[in-house]
Image (tube, rainbow, N blue to C red; front, top):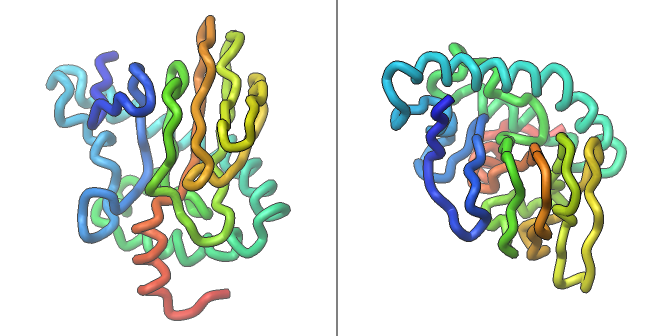
Length: 206
């Protein structure tokens, strides 16, 4: 449809990813991810892309996020307790009242949808470093390969369609092996600068 990624990142892979949600990466305050607005897309496609992104976010928030949060609550209870603080901070973002689907309402602020995989070994420097913040990948499609590679652990792990994988990807260098077929991956994360802002502005922690 002519989706235009905000930036090319050759450190990850040669295929683009759609980021949706909120982060504080390029501003002094949290903001809706700029890719959402598709300002670099062709004018005749901009509205269709905006609608598509909103529909994706709404579907994701309704059907996928609740299942992930159940696992987070089970295995990362301290991290799960921060979700109200994070959601409150995101609720202050300009434009979020008009686009509530971009507030994931949990211990995640952003997710990426990627066709293909991240072939190059990398660290997710902006992931939250408080507690063991999980990065979650839910791959779909008919494909083979794309095993999760973590050199520090001297191995790789098959990631099959429908699996949920979590780890501290801020400290574990990781990437994917070569794959064939069509692969759709969804990765959730919490932006560390946004978390810092949320904690600074919080009146209490449950």
